Length: 386
Image (cartoon, rainbow, N blue to C red; front, side, top):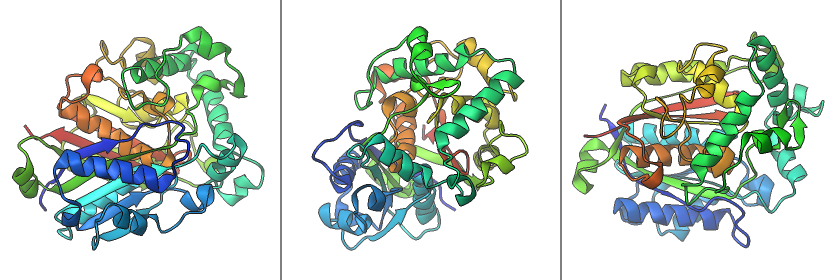
């Protein structure tokens, strides 16, 4: 099986995109990716679109076919990939499979979501629909899962509440240097700790925003990549896994089984381990998730991620393992279908030395995209082809 390369990437401005719809955002990212990679739209064999809820948010379906028309990519095969909030990561897996299998010599993945035109209550209800009906009928939402898990984690592992605030502060600081981030402003711990309570003990700044945006990647066999460029990134490991869809059935709510399983699969495929990762993008939809993914991926022992954060281990400029150099979902924003793709765009730019003021020293990077509250997870490991 030939190695799969990424030869181009693009990302729109994340935030509130008034007067634009999901197809506008997808086309913007897709055309940007074509330009970045030097690939003509007519050369695409496959075109994948990662999207969770275009029908629910704006009554728009058939978006992959419409996108192929709008960017003149006919007659490429098109497919929509929906895996709730991990749709972007699932799209990477699908696009990787299309190339690794030999079915495609040029595949573009575009992820996107349009959300901000709906009220917070309406958007929350759409997102909450991904929970199991047994829990959804009781009014359970993802923020409530996050609050309950955060309370349990803090008490069980004697972690200070300030440690979660440090995650928010770090990611906001990183977002300042990301021109495409929704929030490009720093906050301090006091601001985070005094913001309104959403799901005790989590407060406003422990949550990511509702976001519009799109991101794209161009994938092809390594032999084809060499025809376009000398500098590219290779997907060296990728895997996906699920956990119980009913969250309260998990033996340990502080362990995300899908993170553990997908991480182990990606490590095994790549030949790398946690100590080999130079930079990581984790799915910080809530600050507590950064702790749980650090532990599930082997960056920290169970119950000890908060100590590494307290010690500055995950800081961009001084830490041993910079996490969420993009600003993460917390600062960059979380347009559901685009988030996993945008994680990979950040790792791609880091490995290509194209991250500007966010640049860290990195040859191997990892991104972990989580659906729901760990219901489904995709972990991807990428390395620079140098």
